[in-house]
Amino acid sequence: MKRSLTAAAALLLLLTGACTVYDYDGVSREPLESDAKVRVFTSEEQTPLSAERLGELRFTSNAGATSGEIHQALVKQAREHGADVILIRKMAKIPAGKARVDQLRNEPAPSWNRIDNSTTSAQYMTNTIEYANVSDPEKTIYKTEVEAEFFRTK
Image 1 (cartoon, helix red, strand yellow):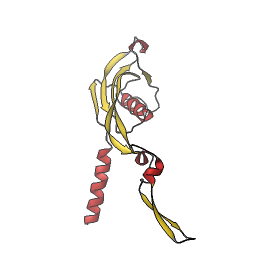
Image 2: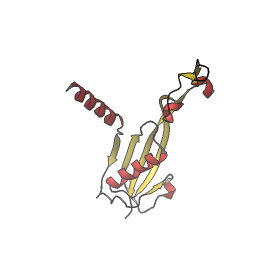
Image 3: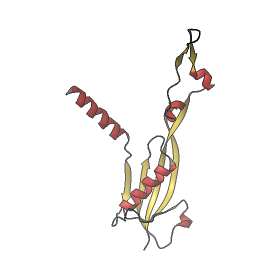
Image 4: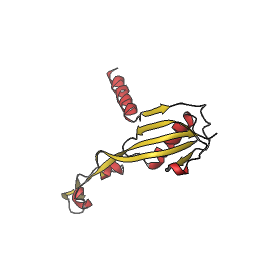
């Protein structure tokens, strides 16, 4: 019983830790189909003049999210609120912490490794951090803060 509770708690932590909270301020129209075309612009001059402004969306992505994942999240939210035009007002990188290079690449961690030479029975230890020749084994990871406006063309 205790094991299943621990597993359930770990799963809950994993699921809630991966959530992104979207803050939408505006009106929603009939949701669009999941394959409906949504145009994304970065300048107000590019947006269609006949488009009706629906509202504004703000969110901060998870650490390490790619621009493709952020784009998909924006388009999904736009479709849910009935928008077919997105105007990105702000995209800013925010430091979210540090991670070792091996963690970012999903590789084994640098450590002391035992090397056995079976021909001579010699054993010695090597430090893979030194072999990697990395002065700072940690790199900054970022979240992305996004502000966008949603529009519906008439």
